[in-house]
Image (spheres, rainbow, N blue to C red):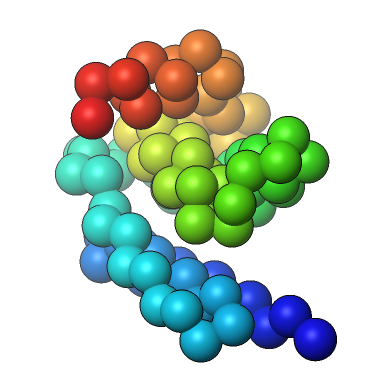
Length: 93
């Protein structure tokens, strides 16, 4: 049985434990103005990427970037990024 645990740590990043293989994903440094909806953004982005066939680690990296964008804006719905915004940041890394 697969055992995957994802632990979000806010500005300390994310830890993914995928069947005993630990991956630490650093947080993206942003100025947080509103954390409302950040967790929903993260989970939704991870789920989206998993349905597209990403590994759990890559999906979590995507979700982490998505949530970093969300917290830099005011409001839950206004904070949600478009995929193009996340892709741009991924391309810059």
